[in-house]
Image 1 (cartoon, rainbow, N blue to C red):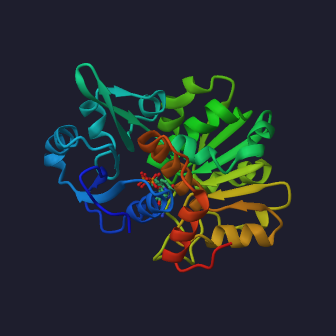
Image 2 (image 1 turned 45 degrees about the vertical axis):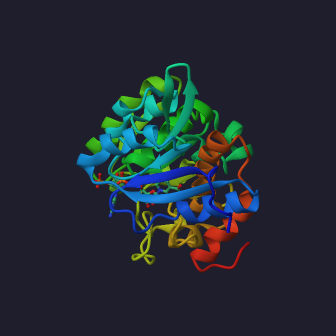
Length: 294
Ligand code: NAP
């Protein structure tokens, strides 16, 4: 364990409740592996106390923070500046403390956007001119849609939600980020054609997450096949039913651990000016999720 002394820099995650947060595990493992004198703590903050908690980050000169449910939107107006991603997604998941002549300035970022993109790598350029489908219309879907519109630029992106109106509202609010992509909204019952013709299928719903690992957002696995990539943002369990069935049908699969580490690595770089050791973070996470490292 890194020794805590007079020079230790503090980072916190602010949320409520916080019992399940895995962020302290991976950040502290990474700090320790790199011998950085940082310590990451989980701070449950009730909604009414968020302004006081943010003032506390400033006053106590924290290096930064992660922000999670239910504060991701409320903190937008409590920071001094916001990244383009935070503005576009309408949510902050990372705060970075910066010294200035006027004292400490807090910058709000949304690292889910780059975290989502990190495991897509070489696939991104091949999305142009192709179809992509995404399940869900919540916070993670918003970050993923913005990422796909600005960096993937598919020909058509179909958003699928149990209430089509929610998918339509998400499409309308982000269309300007990707004017060349045709955004369409569908209910699950109407999305079969979109799933079959898409080269990338993204799950941004919690379906398949513990304690419902036998569920799938798209149980009709015969719609999957070679040439497709199926990307599940759920990371607990890492091998969801969706991924198991898609892989069995010959599709390439990406689990949610890569995004989880990707979004953490973006925050880590901004707090420490160092690259997060991915392998250390992944092994720590997998150990915790009770899976043998790949
Ligand atoms: P959220 O804001 O609550 O949104 C969840 C979305 O899923 C909503 O559109 C919701 O629809 C839909 N949904 C929920 N249950 C459903 C069901 N039974 N059938 C159909 N649709 C359903 O949650 P979120 O923050 O976007 O997170 C979504 C998932 O992504 C979670 O599993 C989370 O762990 C994962 N995630 C992973 C990472 C990562 O780093 N890997 C990052 C962020 C999130 P309604 O609006 O109709 O309820």
